[in-house]
Image 1 (cartoon, helix red, strand yellow):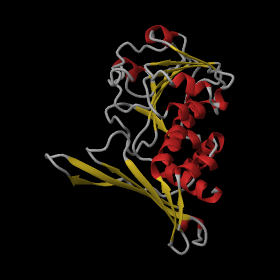
Image 2: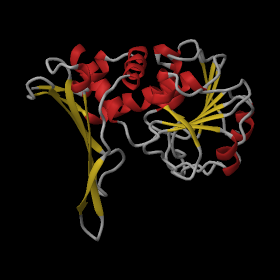
Image 3: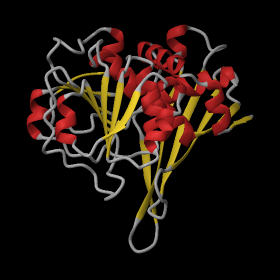
Length: 302
């Protein structure tokens, strides 16, 4: 069995390839059951959680078991952990059943998250999108920005509430060499000129998740919500056209969802219906299809 490290994952992935791999995955018949999880008792009446998401080739549909895979992502979240949960991805041969690869699940999740949001942006943001506003701070911002740049030609990226060195990090990325990278403290004014807004995470200085009661993007803006704890204005949720990863498990069940990524990639539902429509993408927690697609992609290229 091969052990595939974070460095090896980075070495064999490229944003455009990731996007196309994910697009093919949502158009495929990959089998992905519901998430399974269980609580882990810790001290002081606190609980951790371990969850797993399997996925596999639709062997019955293809009428052949000599090709294909079975995979499973495993994620462990404990109250004592700082930051991101730990995780692994285990890949099995679909023909003989032996384990063939064990991947760094944290790095795989970084690429998958950025890829899913960029894939959504390719359907939901306007084709002439050129100005991106990123609100909040997250270690994922450089990966997100590169993934976005694979689907839209940005001329400027404004950072609001990110760490001081984030501007330098973005400016040094080859994928963004022609993009002006700036910072702003005036989010209300900056949103007026944005074609796309990414809500990335909590504010760097305060650590608070953004309660975006002031958020009123211009007509035609696409809002990409990466921070699951951000609070969006009710009017925006009700008036915008909403999309998520998988409608079998949407993040906010009280909202009216237009479609998920399977609908968009297969052409079953429209994304942006008209130029001035405001669209929102909020990711869900069912990611088995995407994890499986990237794990097999990595295995074949590492």
